[in-house]
Length: 183
Length: 125
Image (tube, rainbow over all chains, first blue to last red):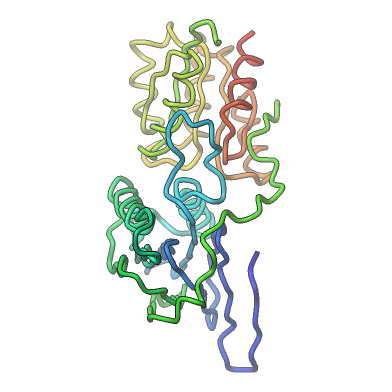
């Protein structure tokens, strides 16, 4: 789900990347934006193809053997989805650079989900050999991230905690994922 | 349980390989893994007779899933081995290409371990 806001002629089109989604853009005058608490947004950018994208995930990965589906709530799915969408739009993994934002620990005394999320994102990118150009994670504050997918520029600023979405699983879209289609 | 079915999973994501290994091993599968098409071909060169089914991602470095399927179908001993694609991709164009290359079927990620188990048993029995 993406909220598109057409401001006016000459103003950038702002696309809100909601929790559980990934979006790749290659259009000038387009800004991808999101607000994060303990969630992570990873921005990928291919400077040669001038294509960039952002995802927004709630949790890192399910516990192995738990039987939980690694679905739209998890970074392990949304990171791969973002990389594949980048490649579909002409991006090359070997040229990609990453920015990682979010992972705040919003509630003192509760499990440090934000730290675990940030650690997962950094480790995943290391395994994929995608260099992290900038990371702003941890702390106790919510963040707003704006990302220009063509220029690869980001802006990350602290916002009031009330602006961050609740850390609850997003409703699962009816994607038909996991079903076998025999040829 | 899966009667010791031997599955080779091919995926360049170490995290996804770990998730697949946990999901399949806990259901009784014998799991081998490769990180891309080239690594899979090299492993199959020596161990191919042991494998009952191959599950491969599409977008991988060095050799992608399409290349792997085409290379395997050119070899007599893998002509009838079930090969399932497991990918976040779901476009008709990509599926048609996989079908043309010789894939047995396609599963869209995110994968459900129960559904994957059912699919593997279906194509190996």
